[in-house]
Length: 512
Image (cartoon, rainbow, N blue to C red; front, side, top):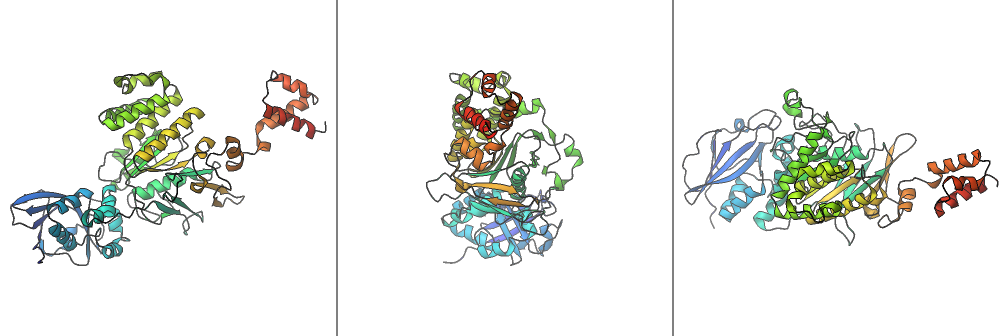
């Protein structure tokens, strides 16, 4: 069967496409600047005497330098196919669906002649390490998704889903010499959606998660990126199959980069927390660092209220999310058990909540609004500001959301309530030795379903002899001349059996 006769024509931005014979592909230059690279075109295909808007495609050249328009490399505005020096990638899965739905043979011929890297692994392997490819062609999360799913759309092949990656600090620039593997692969009956990081304050849990956010949203595989002023010493060994990133942290001192929020041409990254970009950042920051910044200020109460109100408004327009949100609110806030629909989306309810409940509402409304299929959530210390019972409810809701959307999460926590819900194979303990070297170990026991006391003493290493109340017992015995009855009476005779046992042990250790 003869190959379709395809002809390509490049036209400048803001130029009318005109009318052309069937099987003519018009590539209209966009001149959008991807941190120095200009690779974007809008594709139109003339098919069956109609002009079809196919979508955005980016084309790069192997030796393309910064701030050089791709059109510079074309000797002619017309061509039949690109040479081996070029590579293209559609910027969304819809681009490939439109092509294949028009005509299978024509679609494949167009992709081959444009040297599309999503359907040809050799082309991908030859371009994947180039800065122009990582910085421009893969800038969008939708482009990363298209790269992963195009073969399944075009050829019906099963998509290869990458649910594990390594955050690697083993390089000459790093103060550390370690790495950590995150694995969400479902290999058994065990729940695998959550990877948990535990460790003392100062070992770098939050920084690890912020490095993941930086590397995934500015995927370069290396330590630096042209897209941001945020340095990281880490590397990712591969790009996992997550296409939306949500960072949640109600810690004023976290390290997460704050997304600009106004640029829809970037990786889908959302931050829910206390920090905000400086109010003057739009006037002072250059394009190179305008996407994300760690230079921040704290959000005002009105800003936090506005975020919740915006989330409520978005949720109320989606029937499925709306029902989920109402169910979660009933589980968290008993006073809403019999609320009508309008009350669930009335921001005035905020004024009736405690500080912890307000944080909880912010978390839940943000998650229900933002989570989507194949999201990765970075949740820093979810126990902050929350009662243990509410913390347990939040975790149950969190699991429900992850299951609903085939999403995964990395959590950094000091809470045994969180730890007892994660199997030990997905828990990693981060330590620092006396020389400030960092090392990572798995737990030495099964954490899933373990008791709070066991987790507190073994996983979080808060041993009985280190707890402050023992020192208070010692002081009280010393002050009363080892009068154990006087110590018990000071508590009204209501010490628990465990506390009474500890008191007697200390009493005997003093030679009584």
